[in-house]
Each structure stands twice: as structure tokens, then as C-alpha cells.
Image (tube, rainbow, N blue to C red; front, side):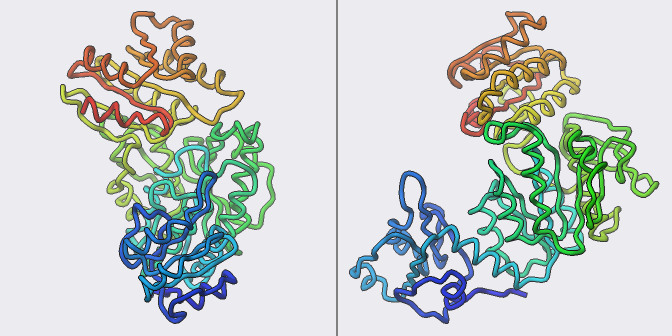
Length: 463
């Protein structure tokens, strides 16, 4: 049942000041971006490092916003006269206001909430879990990467008639997930892994573990924790912790509650046997890679925690659709298989993607790799480790783009990869030219880098 928020609710929750508008009006949808705003939405002006979004209130009203929630701005009386039905609320801090509104909205709904965090695989795991839950519930899930202190509240404020919610929680420092979990109040907390993403800020994997474990702070009293038992730090934590919550482990490790075995990979997916409470099930995944086997095991663990029949959960896994630009299989103009995984990159996801590429049966495997960002002093070492993965997975052709990625090429060559099979580029355009010159019909090509490198342009150029 839809439980909308009124303007009066917003004023009370945020301690805001109503400049104009009807306090009994209902607010259904919110937007923080005037470029994406649609008619009838409430615009929330976020103050960033370079500009104050609250100054764009006139643009928002021109596009049909029902009103605006603003900070640090004086609204021109002429604008108010031009839009007499507009609702204008002034708050001390729009981000804090957004969070308070989301927490209130969450409190109105007695529905199961699954929260997911981890160094890699959050989005694909979220997509798979949502597909599994959709076998029983109408599900709301995080869009794209709306997983931070602004994105998560906006996700919760989208709640209408949904019967369950799956939210993603990202972070760059300690305390961030603590805030998010107190807003979302999950019933199931999932930690996919502890890797090296954001190690520039947190310095050690142990600190990353500490940050991810904050997700438990908002867990409901009868909540369940789900962890990847194949991850060394999570496995060790599970062996030594003492918690009141139920814990379900998953992985390829035979000590796990839910186990994957007899995995078979092919170009467009994989199959394996899942062992759940000593019973075996055949599982089919419509996307390849061992990390997606892990993600699907996680989804089965969520199904178990939420009393969804395993057979129905397996159907949800078979039908799930991956978010765009994450291990997306495309065809090049010449016919080659392109693995578009250019949404983001860190060492763990690079390793997983190269492992998948290495297992393919295509006669020639090409890796187009770019810089991994936010690694700080660990950057050189982790890029070199990617070079080791390139060599170990017997990649036939390596194309590296960017200053940091040069360490990938150097390490692969040091280990024995032939110099004539390695190309080092400063710009994406060089990589595109190399591919256009060398690409063959039967090739398999992995395209991967941090999102800011915009490797999607490489995929678009050859597909």
C-alpha cells in the first residue's frame, strides 16, 4: 500500500521552513538533478564542492517541478509570482533533510529489506537477489550506483506499492555505511567480499572489513547476516565473532551453508550444482564468470533467509538481467565477442574478469585494460598484480591505456608475455585503432577500466 509523504511531514521531519505552497500537498517523487527531473517531482538542491544545486530552483520549476527543497539561497519573489502553485521549503542541509525523509518513509513500511555491501559485485548481486525476490514479491531495488548518502535515501523515497526492497550500500570511509544502514533498517545484511576497493582511504583490508561490518548496526532484531565464506577476512571473522544474529555462509568452500560445485563455463553463462541443506539443485546463470556463481549462491542464501523456495529462487537466477556495462556480452562489427565490463574496476573485479576471459574457448583472447582509480600508494602494486593475472590466464593480446595501466603491461612482459603481443596507449583512440586493425571474428575481448576512463567509448567504436 502506497504511503506518500505530505509537505507538512517534510517540514516536521526536517525542521524546514515553508516559504510558499500547500502544506497538505502530497509529495510522491524526488529528484536531485534538473537535467533528469520530470514534471511533478520535488527538486532537492544539493550543495556540492563546486556549486550549490539550490541555486537552480528556477530551472527546476521551469521543467515542471512541483516544488523545491533548498538550502543557503534566497528565493526571488518574482520567481514565486511566476509559479504561484510552487512549494518552496528551506532547510539547513538538504542532504541531511533527504536522509531524514527517507528514514521516515522506511518507518511507514513493514516490508523485508535486503542491504548489500562489499568491495566488488554489489550491483550484480543486487540485481540477482532482486530477481530472486521477484518470484514472491513486488521488489524495489537500487538504480545504477545510487548507493551513497544521497542515492540510498532517493531509492527509499521511491517506495510505492512494493512488498520488498533491495538496496546497495557503498562507502569510501568509516562511518558511511553506519549512516546508511540506520536509514534502511535491513532485515538481511549481505557482505559479498572484502577486497582492495577504496584502500587509498582506509589503508588496510582490515579497515575495509570494519567499514563493511557497519551494515550490521541497523539490522533488525531478528535479522540475518549473509557472508561470502570464500573470502579470507569474512571467513575468519565468522570463526571468531559472537553475534545474536543468524548467519548464513555461501561459497565454493565445503564448510559453507550453501555450496557451489561442478561449475561449467560457456560464453553466454554457466551452470553448476548448488548444495542447500544437503540437497543438490541444478543452477543456470545467464552470464559467465566464477564471480557470478558466487553472486547466485548469495541470492540462494537470501532466498533461504526469506523462506523462498529454492526452486523458485533458481528460476529467478535464470531470468535475472545484469545492469548495463557489467560483463555485458556484445558482438563487434566484425563478429568478435566483446565483454563490456567498463562500468568500474578494482583489483578483485579485474582478477575475476580475466579469469572468466581465460576460461573461454575462443582461439584468441584480448584484454583491453585501463587505470584502476582510488588506490593511492597501493596503485603500482595492484596494477602489477593485474599484470600477473593477465599472464596466468594466458591472454594472447594485451592493450593497456593510461599512466597507471602501464604497470600491468610491464609486469606481464616481465613474466614472459611477448613484447609484440603488448600495446601501451596514452589515449582510448589508440586502443580503438589497434583493435580495428587486429580484431578477428573468433576473438574474445575484455574491455575494463574504472568508469572515469570512459571505456564505453571503445565498445561503442567497435560494436
